[in-house]
Structures are given as structure tokens and as C-alpha cells.
Image (tube, rainbow, N blue to C red):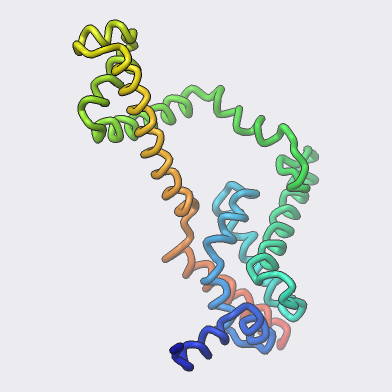
Length: 237
């Protein structure tokens, strides 16, 4: 049986309840909302504004807009979706203002449903940067070496001979005194295991992209609350 107290607490923390509490001036609910969505919203802001400081500034302004407009939240979408729109509007607005100041075309497409070559061009710039390319290769090499070390010896040796030493199937078979079919099978299996292992690491890493916990979270929450307090004092004065 569900604990009545726990059920009441969960209901008090659902989206409509949090929105109502914030609209009524409950700062603890506002802080709860920020801490709940900080990391996800920071990632969203960072996708538009790659500079950490710019993304954090935009998120602060979006939170202040959310505080002022929270009475408009009707629960038709989740609170996160509603906040996401505010964050994107703030980020895209900053991109447009920057573009006007620089008198250049924005580097970020304002319509997320429109495909352009801008993103590919921006990424391609790194392909012509030798230092970036070398550093990226070094990081991948170190990761691949660690993964390779963990393969069973039979597969690791075949992979080394075929992929690293670039020996032919025939040469590898002769060197290890195994059939060419076994060489092909083990090489295929070794590559598959490496891909699977790398994919697992990538999946785990994706969850931690642009981590926004601990001190970062505390700093942003404190900054937004301080700005909110300052603004109210200014209005009272």
C-alpha cells in the first residue's frame, strides 16, 4: 500500500503543483524546479550557445522569464517542455542580436526543422585544424588501446595483425597457423566487440554530457534567486 504521506509529497512536487506554488511566490518551489531541470536545460542551451558562460547566462534569463510568466503555464505540456521553449527563445534571441551587431548571418538556424549546411560547415572547420585532428586521434587511440587490451587474446592478436600491422588474411593465417576462415571470423568478431564496447561507453558518456550538477547547479540557482531578489527590491524602492 502506498504511503499517504509519500503520495501527498509526490503530488505536491508534480508540474501543476510546482507551477501554482511558484505563481503564489513560493521560492522553495522555484528552486526545486531549477534544480530538477538545470542539467537538461543547460545541455539544451549549450547546444545553441557552445560557450559555457553564454549558455549559463541564457539559462538564468530564461528562468527569470519563467518566474514572471509561470501563471501562463496550463499543463498542456510538461513543465520541462514549457521551460525548454523559453530557453530556446532566449538562446536564439541572443544569436540574432549577436548577428545584428556583427552584421553577419546567424550561425544557428532559428528553425530547428530546417536542414542547412551550416552545422556541417562548422564541424568541418575542425577537419582543417591539424592540432585538433592530432589531439582527437590521440584520444581515440588511447581509448581503443584500452579496449583492445581487454579482448580475448585470440581475437586481439588477429586484430593487431590485420588492422594494425595490415597483414593480409593469408599472411595472418600462416603466421598463426590457423585457417583463413578462422582469421576472417576472429577479425570480424574482434571489430564487433570493440564497436560494442565503444558504443556502451558512448551511451554512458552521452548521459553525462555537459554535466551541470554540484557547484554549477548551486551557483546558477543562487544567481537567479539573487537577481530575482534584487529586481523586487528595486521595484519596491
